[in-house]
Amino acid sequence: MRDLSAETRIGLEALGLRIGRNGGTLLDVPRLVFDGPGPTLILGPNGAGKSLLLRCLHGLIKPDAGQVRQDGAPLGPAQKARQAMVFQQPVLLRRSVAGNLDFVLRRRGMVRATRKDRIAALLAEGGLSDKARQSARSLSGGEAQRLAILRALATEPDILFLDEPTSALDPAATLAIERMVLRASAQGVRIVMVSHDIGQARRLAADAAMMQGGRVVEHGPASEVLETPKSEAARRYLAGGLIL
Ligand SMILES: Nc1ncnc2c1ncn2[C@@H]1O[C@H](COP(=O)(O)OP(=O)(O)O)[C@@H](O)[C@H]1O
Ligand SMILES: [Mg+2]
Image (cartoon, rainbow, N blue to C red; front, top):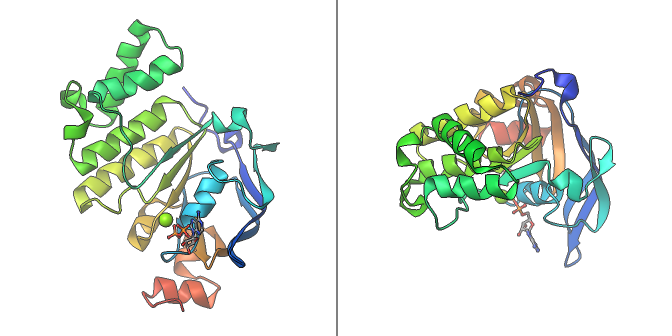
């Protein structure tokens, strides 16, 4: 079991991250540090650069400049192996529900008997125990996303990135995902989650960042960012207005 103390959490830093395309700047993040306890939510309008930032942090996109550091070390294979990512559309294998989890555990070198117990525990965690033998492709959207999160958690990541994991889901399915995210956070997994749902940010975030035009316009304790934002852009976004 993980140590729950905040001090043991793996910190994440984006230093001087820049992505430019076609003469424009898609991402410009001089310094962004995630080191506090509890989930970080990244908010902002479509096109703000939220997904780009997450992909950079996870090493899926190499920035034109800058560096991601994880617990003080530059992002390399060892660091990436401690990260997992969940996307808006769950990416599942054409196997049974249990088979999707078994694949990950086997790749991690877990022996069969241990895998069986671990799969049972994971399925219970995601409320999918009765679907173990069903094809993953037959799951509902919410169930499929729960399985995608379980698969990510099966790798025992230090950091879990989630890119709008509930934006295609109804409120009940969304709440089920939010409960899983909060449990993982309580168990010591650093959560960095993109959302455009301010209500969701209020329910989950300890820490919040607001993006606009490829920049982080606000970052701090969620209570401050969501209730008393300093920037005009954040105030208008929270008020439901358009950022022009
Ligand atoms: N690979 C790419 N090449 C060029 N432009 C991109 C690429 N990926 C994203 N963009 C652009 O970068 C901006 C930010 O995109 P994205 O990070 O997906 O926004 P968000 O997730 O906040 O909605 C958008 O203008 C998008 O069109
Ligand atoms: Mg996006």
